[in-house]
Length: 273
Image (tube, rainbow, N blue to C red; front, top):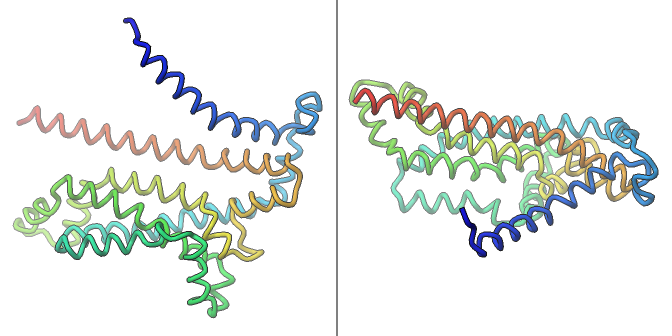
């Protein structure tokens, strides 16, 4: 099949854009395993910088994972019922509440964190705890769970399915876990994908809310680039990607598996009909 000139222009533009984004990351990763980046590969390869980062910043890794998983749990507990409530609410009120939910995303993270410090900074035990960062992450990531779940609920016409289940005598909790949750599974998985990755990589809110004892991965990364050798900061980037990429791939695989399973179920139902 003969390709047109426009195709090759688009392909060249796409490849150039991809290289523009990927090459700096690859060079940074290479610097993390190079003995001396300014000399180059002639200085030799080493894992000394990776070991140094792990020794100095391992606690930031575990704290980031703890906050991210806790944030996902909180957002699931709040976001899915909130999306269902917005679906059942009159459209005028639902749109207003959706706009309010987006305020932490529209505002700069530093402004949100500053507001939290002004209002809740007087609670010293909370201020010194990682739970203070968790609250900021939940506020920031909640819209990323509510919006996709609400979109799936609207597309699936869950209100009619809920009314049908209620007419058959199913109670609220039975309908919620056997009708609502299974039918918006794809939206929940998409939201979980975004919430987990955003929480792990969130810097602006975390930078304002953290203390010397509650540093997370992004804050430690900024600290390593600001106060250490370039090789140390690059090794930190290497560890950061080594952690987040498997999580992204796992969540993506789970999402695709759920979608294929739902498609097979729809095809089987059509065959029966």
